[in-house]
Every structure is written in structure tokens, then in C-alpha cells.
Image (tube, rainbow, N blue to C red; front, side, top):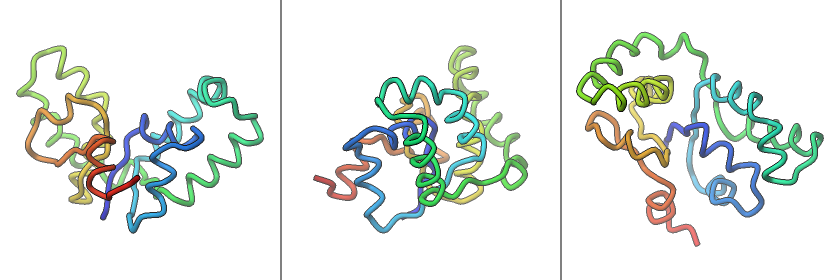
Length: 144
């Protein structure tokens, strides 16, 4: 199974006992925009505080995450931004603004022709890309 993983799901990698870590033992290929690494760095202090990991542990976990998830450069999917904006145009103004915040993940999923793993309910309000939340991933891969 191939999946594009959003930033919030990636953040859970740093939690002890997270579903995301268990999920990595399954036969999956995970992708995310390089932008997601910037998000992890941007929120690193908050992640360390919430997960009680040291700066050294955080750095080590981030390296481990980079081995498990293929981070794709912007130039490999940015040509589909116009298509994502077209999909988003069907939403209300507020939903449009929220949806566009995830443009990188959505464009990458279109480029790779694979679903997205995200708990963002708004992403499910379209029919171009399949979106699984964590509960659905657990059921799909029979994670216990």
C-alpha cells in the first residue's frame, strides 16, 4: 500500500506507542512533501514538550522518520496545484482557505495516484483522492 502522510500524522511518530510507529511494520510505502519536514522543524519545541523527548532523541527520531517516509521535493508535484485549486473552488470561502493549506499533500497524492492518510475531515469532502483517517488505517491494516 502507498500513502501520502500529512504533517499531523507525521507528528505522531514522536509519540510513544503511536499507531504510526506500529504501522511502519506493515508492507507500506509512505510519502510526504519536503514541506512536511519544515513543519516538523517549525513545531519541534512543541513536539518535544508534548512527547517528553529530549532534543537529542528528537533529532534521532527525525532521522528515523526520514528513513521510513520518502520526502518528495516540490518540483515533483507542483504542476498539479492548479488541479487542487480547481477542486477547492467547489468549497465555501472558509473551506477553500483551509483546503488550500493542504495543497502540497493533495497535489502529491494526485501525482503519485495514491490515497492520503489524514485526520482532516475537510479532505474527505472531495472525490478525487481517497482519504483515510487513522481509525480507517487501523481497520484497513488490522492493527491491534
